[in-house]
Image (cartoon, rainbow, N blue to C red; front, side, top):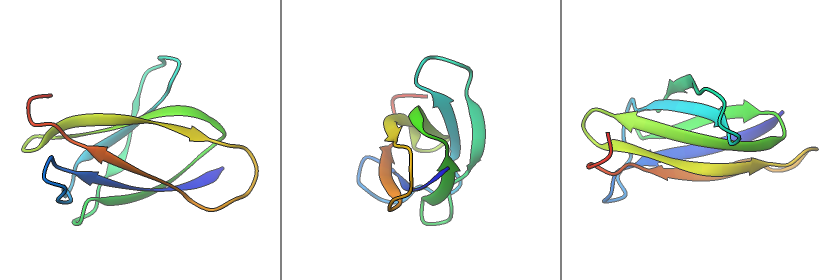
Length: 89
């Protein structure tokens, strides 16, 4: 498992509180809601090696996602940002 540190932001770059965050293998399997973003839009999770789609949704800020490659072995935390687009819900 590898540590990931992320942030959910709106189109202006401000953190989005309590966005629903989901993770799915990039090969199209069903997504699971992993957690909610914190008050400042940040989140931390651990994933096994592989390629994942990590997405987020907020009733007020919209939806967005990003692809994350998680390498095997130990190493520093992988950082990512999900930008929500208001027109995508």
